[in-house]
Length: 300
Image (cartoon, rainbow, N blue to C red; front, side, top):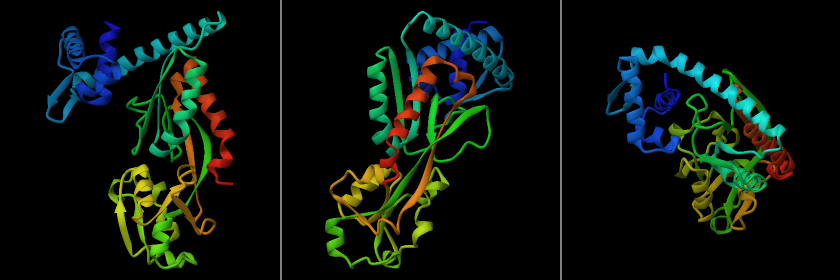
């Protein structure tokens, strides 16, 4: 059985859509379709049912999936051996590592760190998914992910990457135009900028529940970067990561000690790829860079 065809099968299984699978594989969607059709001809049965929602596995596809995943694991084991041999010969790191993270942390903290890593290893390529949602490891959307919640189960390795601080911020113009804030109780009478409750991707984003229940939410967004910009433009008060807001001269901390909230970032990757040299190097590099900048993350 052609392993290349199985690679396309696995990617389409995880993404559910030809276009998404094609982007991840770096090919045209017709190539994915052709490869899957070739595999179906080899198996002698349809592996996917196709409808407006995308591609879903048939019973034959579900039977094939664990066997394809075993072959994938075997190929990864061979790649580990190859990389170990290459390292013994002094060859440089190469290949692709896909890193997923929350939008603010990925943009402000990880992007500069990963840029430094690619300067050290010119043959290494990085995909950074800095998005306001959960990046799914089980669907192989990324190799390494940074999340707000500790993984509860699965064949993963993980580490507590860092704690970080958030606090209330507002623009100077907003504070000058509204009643003074002398205590947390005063916050209730102000408009807030926050997340859209029914679109929250983590329970760790319920910051306001720990501080106050404001009478009005002036603006909501799924994007923490959009929240920061709206706050700087005077829309209201927002609970923002210090690593994101402290460097913005347009923003002023509001009751910085009384509104301080601590959250944790966890870093996770699948057990089966942990020994790949490029994965291990990226993991260790990010851990060291984040630890070096921990004081800024905690706003100490």
